[in-house]
Figure: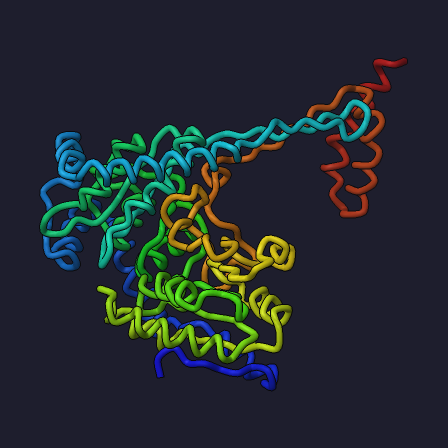
Length: 437
């Protein structure tokens, strides 16, 4: 049954865990094998392999992968004024929020004569991947391009798939508005391999960010494991939302929030935690009614099979289960949502109250929508300005600082049996003792 209601009020621990189970990655072993073959082919044969994969997967093999400025101009001109204005408004909000994340200088004297610092440098070259399968995602470009620009990355390279009609114009328009001019019409795992190792057309980058299919995710993980490859932004799985609501919430709003996230993918998951069985029933009725008028109904019908409405003892129990689950998106449909924020320990991004739909965070509130999924929110954070920067520590000692702290280092080196470590200190201490005599 689609969108099941499960009463957990008298359930044992095993039943509770099963109710929070995420969709499994069926065929992951064979998928990894296929992706490794794609990565190896692109690494070995460059553009020739990219053309072969484009013909196989996209049905078109372009003579060139680079998108020209004239093509971007045409895409920008093809969009209505309200679309351009919406893209710009989203960019502006994302820029404001991420500019505020610029780290302050850190300088500390940990001991007399011992100065420790942390300096920040941008990653030299980053690759942005923007999917364009069943739904092109210019918003995903904004979420990575804006912080990359703010961080000061010298080279920002965009890869996005092209269909028979070329690259989606909204993605090209967003790239222009974000100041991205190195754009390549390449998608899938092969695009990740091209960014990681470079080809005749596509430059190599140090880090790759952006969402994608299971193939893209696997490719990012494969190249990140290779010292010659490229780092990834964060682990990712299918999209998900968890809503905590009591009987005072609007069931139409809650149903809409569940459907909004469930439409991403057939493996997406939407969960409601509520202390009212009657409210859960109203949400289910509202969700199935709204489903009838949505264009991605075929996807929703499958993802809702993996979604569920869970009835728990009370709202405290709902927070305990949510923290255990670690949702990508957490929506609090509660009258005291702001006060209950203190109970949130694990989540990718939180939406407070009835008037904060998850869609606003996806597009234009200013926060980043590239978030940890599949439980990774227990240990990872969403994309931020810091993901495009390197933090480097610095230390500087005066002679007096070394005289004071050096014996501590030699003692610890002795405990570890590393006499060369100790020697690097003692030769300096001896020189200082000679200077003193």
